[in-house]
Amino acid sequence: MRHIIAELAARLSPSERAKPEVEQLASYGCLTQMHVVRLLAPQREGEDQFKDIDFSPSGIGMRREAGYQATMRALEQAPWQGVFDPIEGVILHEQMPDLAMAAEPTAMRRNHAPS
Image (cartoon, rainbow, N blue to C red; front, top):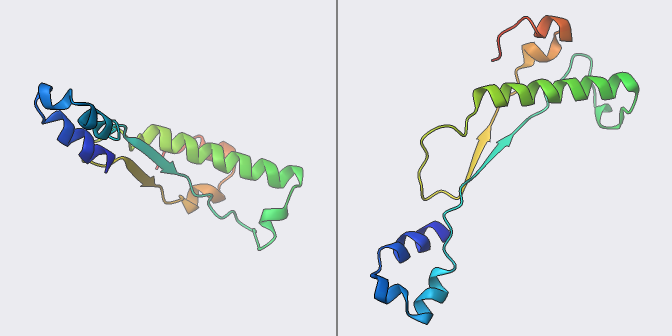
C-alpha cells in the first residue's frame, strides 16, 4: 500500500503535492523494497526429534556449518538481483535445503559447486 501511495503522489502536480493535507497523506508513501532470504536448516544424517536440544560441541558445530554453507549458497545465488514488481515492498526468497550437500562431510562439500 505504501508503494501505491508513493506512486500516486508522484503523479500529482507540484502545486497539488504542496498542499499540507496532500503532503501529510503522501508521507505515508514509501518506495523501500526489502528482500528476505529464508534459510532452511537441512536435516542432517542421524538427526532425530532431539536436535533442538542438542548443545553438544559436535551438534552445535554441525548446525553452525550447515548454516554457514546455506548462507554461502544464498549469497552466491543472490536471488535479490533480479527484476521484481516495483509495487512489492517485501519479497520473500525461499531456498530449499540441499539434502545431499547436508549429509556430506565439510571437506567434500568444498569440492562441489554450489547448488
